[in-house]
Image (tube, rainbow, N blue to C red; front, side):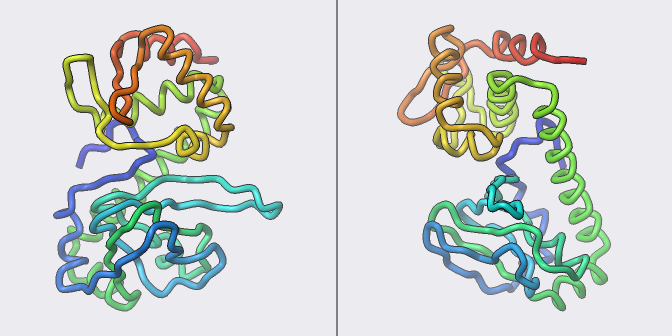
Length: 227
């Protein structure tokens, strides 16, 4: 299991959690359909079969912070289930999606039955923790432009496809998606993308971002580090 990059778009090999999802019924979700809310008691854990699910948390004042986006093969809802506490996050489908909903008693039974599954779940939890730690350090040590550049690097490591112009990021995302994940404004993201485009570092191609100068993008993040 390769965890390089820690992209906020979490996609895993669908076969990793096969013992957990085998023979489980699927749930079909419409775009923007909630799965659970922060404060709900957990009843199931979930694995994305197809689509995207956004995991968010809200402060007491109602400020939203998007934590990560669960894509194919990703597990979510396990944290509160294992601790037997109310959900500390909310989960909402971003697009029409299909997920597995595994009842808690079956989840616990499968963990006892399959040691390799338990190891895999622990690795997934560790990956999420590493992602959150990295983002926390980034917010305290990087400017907004550098954080956006780093996010593009991370996403390209998982979703980058070589093309004639450079490395094309195969998934679509809006400026607002990036803003929500980095806890900044859409205007800030738009200005950063304009700057990167003017410098020839990225271009837009059929709603996808293409990184034309990977070295320049890497240098931009390295030069910004504040020890």
